Length: 388
Ligand code: GTR
Image (cartoon, rainbow, N blue to C red):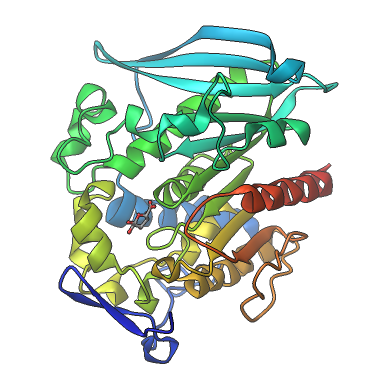
């Protein structure tokens, strides 16, 4: 386990903290002219949009802001699902653009025991539809729906591959070819992760139309590649009230410049279809990236964001994710949001909950499980209560 290097796809993978290179992180609060952002207004009007477009241009691709129309159809409904505890709605979302359309299904359970519209957790499901079985014949710790319902939240999910297949040969065969073919022509055009994030925003559009849901309390959740997507969706679409990313690793919460575990070069080689073409230019040149991943967390401010890592998942660089969180703090300070992250890496299984930036380093494997969800609920309870 203490092995300090590994080899993968012809590259040495570093797992040695002592050989992490020295690096300088781009400053969240300084514009390219070196001027310091001193207030929320300059952040929101100037610096934030500037950073957002740097992420679009160099990593995730441009996000199309327009399309012709959207339609929601309830394809199945059961008011007494889960032995009467929840109301099940299966929704088919259809988006149209220039005469073409794409449809994708969403599963939603809403607690019946409530006095007002329910806050909701929306999972970007990247691990197969069995995890989000609406019949509940098949249950999964990846999406423990009963547990979420018992805690008073609604829970929803869509499957990423329904809007863009997760394969380098076929990722185009979804919203890209159908709705936004121009994205495929450009070096800064979005690919799979951009497409999945776009779909998350369409589910957000749906929530706004459902009176049983409190659209001001929609948390977006994702694991690994889904976690990268959750962060990007939350950065892009400020209607998401909270962001939860589980083991999101490279090009998620982890700092690129540390070159620990999965690097920009390796992720581009293995998963080039997730990011735009421009990102490939940084494979062997991460220090010239105009951003690093702490800035992605900064874009979510002042909204609460929670990151997890697992002890057996060095590939995702746990310490690098923790450092991203710590380095995003200046923006939360600007908004006077309380961040109680310690200076050093938290101990295993000691979640930081009472904070606008939360974090835990859990025992175990690269996964999203009941321990993670338990702490997501605690974090949401704390932060929604703080706001009220
Ligand atoms: C890995 C990939 C990671 C992560 C993971 C997953 O193979 O290298 O970046 O996204 O897949 O999604 O489970």
